[in-house]
Image (tube, one colour):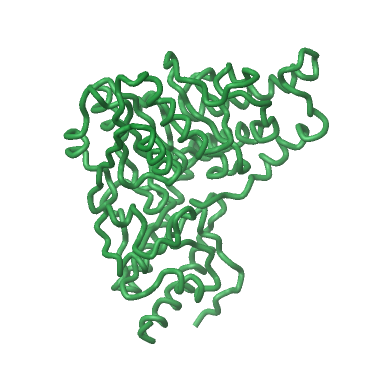
Length: 386
């Protein structure tokens, strides 16, 4: 029997990624050398301002958008909240219904809860057993009172990709705005805002090798959305506050790296590694169930259920692996997250949920170590009746 090395294998990239070395290098001058306020009038500040606009252009290019549609934010939570709150305010009380899928991230669902307390009508549309939104039920919910529809582009727990183009077509038919939380999609798959036909799209830097605390909101050109933060008028008056220049530059560099990786077949390589791991697990562990495999998925995400086991205990026993029992934002839900509930996963099965998510650094050798360790751990736990 081969000895399993003790080097941990990180497979929790959907929770966060490391900051790429190239991103760190790009950011470095803007901490001390080029520290100037981009709103100041002198030449040094103009060079900093140019770096901010260069980063904006890079993020826009990654999304197939125009530069003036990108507004930098502190990350996904701010972008989601701004999109939803402003999307309702845009209608000045003439439309109050907000529709979302039942598998949204807490950044969306908690904002919906707040909007409901302010008088909005919130409707959540369930998914099928693969985690894909039920378009037939969405059709039943849409009407002229709908202010906005918000559906994530790719699910953070099972990797299911949502049919955003169809969601947008249906929502726009009744005049509603469309927002998609693309936190898990940008940098992992090709994202084109024109093809998706969305009005608003959330970008999160730390999901694709940029620093934490930086993100963006795409706002369709011509959409006069209320400002996210009033104040000094930065970001074209849409999001005030002195720009976090190092992080913005880092996000721009990460966007360029992502564009290159996508063009070189990175997603396909990840999917092949994921599929090999999936095949090994299902062959060695016949009881295991793969979630979302009947629908389009992110190539880096493998979600499985181990009936009769508790996912957290499996990961604690499998010391070679660094993975998760779901989203980092709601891993402690004993009855299963809303995503698993919407997919019809029984609570007793949901306890055995494990999510493995690959990154650009993940190699075949790493996956081999992960597979050996995980299979050995699971087989032992089943044999001992845990």
